[in-house]
Length: 506
Ligand code: N01
Image (tube, rainbow, N blue to C red):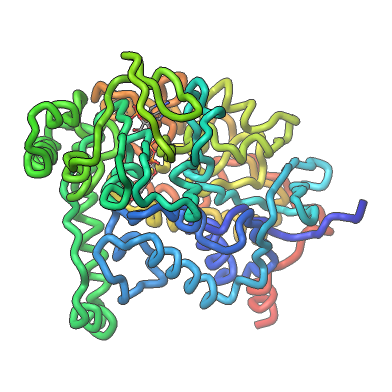
């Protein structure tokens, strides 16, 4: 076997998270890194989700890197192709792409305590990395429903995140299972094309209007040329969104205006009282992700659409049978049933200091990580978009940038202080998680009367951040070595970064 490629930092994934880490490491003078990416290009979830109607439900002025503003967004909520093109451009302009290894999957990463290195085997080379950063993302592994007979379906079948563009839906009998964020974008996009559409709803979501608009040319020109204007947009959107936090975390009654908007959205889009009743949720708004659409309800009300609320009993080779015994024949089955969120798949491949995979450790305890970033027993491993970093109201890019600041500071601090490993103290991690779970008790996600993918099998919310995003940023502003067990560098690994070398020559 050939010897591993020595690298200082190995980043897994090249979506917003991995790309941000690469750019910020480079800016910090840390040039000895690789980015391992299973796909053929950057973009992560924005590369994989190409379904018709895919768009962001956070305004792009905020859902973009603070250090790479884009005055050319065509809409206030950008469509997926524009976001992907943005990420590709940012990656190209950053000058980091030569360190990206595409079409390569991380198969196993094992901590070698003797060397204070991660031994990372991939479908290509094997690497010995001082630090591993996982930007593998929370929405990367599609979840297929465990429905009897699904594997016997003889027509076309695909998940929303693996859209099969070779399948022509025109005139076909199509079923969509699920009514989450992906489905409510897909349904109105395909309803005018298909012959007949059955939408299988298990739980009705709350859907408020999407106040989207096209940016006229003069506004885009102003955003490009007027100094500070884009920052102003971003700041206004940020604080507008941040204003929703108390409604989720402390006082769900504050969401009453949103509920009124959602009910008005139903009345506007649907005239049939029976259908209105079917789509009206029976839990508190905010308990599940609040969705935004002006076109979803009209698409459900269209003549060629049926909303099916009887539970699915089984799938046959030619259709779907509901619990009342009705079989609806279909040609194409679209599965919009979400992702594995509370058991991040990458964790099956990460083996820590004590020889246990992170998946096994979390199987017992549920997901937890100090500051959503570091886990005891897994030295020199940092997560981006780790446990309890998700948001329902604002931009994940803000959270990603906060975590990357912390991680880059950790790496620089390791170098400056000669640490060969840093491992968060178990008591610190436990106290962090206990305090988050304590806060969770008052949130609408726990009290709102719904079951959601935010909650794990123990009933704990291990996905969302239950405070303001600026408090998250504050908590991650600097690497706090005191919360970690640190080990001193072995001489062979005491390599200064390029910047440190430059500083020491100055
Ligand atoms: O997945 P979901 P998604 N039988 O898990 C139903 C992000 N996102 O892909 O509610 C029948 O939300 C399930 O029913 P229930 C965003 O963070 C962002 O739509 O569990 N139905 C639900 O209706 C989002 O939250 C954008 O009862 C079954 C649906 O499938 C996340 O991705 C756009 C079932 C799954 O909804 C996931 O969204 C799209 C079964 N066995 C997505 N199993 C933006 O705009 C599941 N369901 C940024």
